[in-house]
Length: 265
Ligand SMILES: [Fe+2]
Image (cartoon, rainbow, N blue to C red; front, side):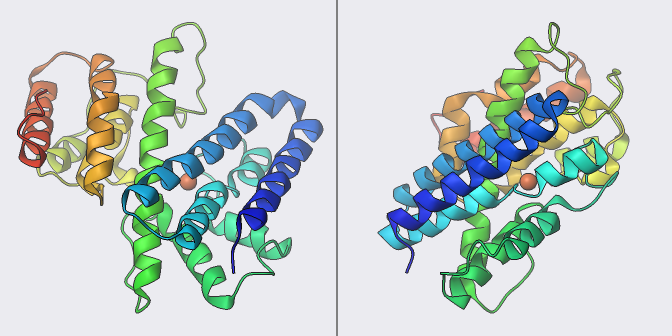
């Protein structure tokens, strides 16, 4: 059983866990705070999707837990390596599962719930969900992947607005901010494929990768929400105006319109 009370306990554990890092590394407080805030907002976002899909109370609570804990590995990653780039450090989803296991956080849950939470966390950052006989693992992995993307879009579009005054290289994965777009990145987005993290060389590549997440949303509700929040418009505003970018816009526009005729870009 997972109850409202269980989730409240997880939330206070999470607050304390984060505060320890802030106290120990006050100079890193800003980025720690950004990830803590992201975790809480992803748990709200995932509840929004789960309720829209009319899941039962327990399933909603399970989803909320996955949202709260999906990035729990980010804090150790950041204090140990000073980056949120997995390729420059360690896989943050695996780190997160270790943190939950070492602290015995999920001890009161059934083995099945524990497995769903661990596997969904591992799947959230993979290029694709790995196949599993347990359909619930696939389903909750889809939920967390959509919720995570929606809140990253919120976070980075808020950041791009203040970037001039308050640059944060960590949020840009330390990528160089130059006009170039890598061919492989452009080609994959034109093919409506999610850009592979490994192919990013510039900040523009990263922005295009974030735009390409549109093609990987699992639920209609998430596409509606992305559209209504205008996150992709806001990313496009930060990109150079050139032929490549207008082609990308056209692809995005069509994708939205195929989803809902009234969606224009
Ligand atoms: Fe993550």
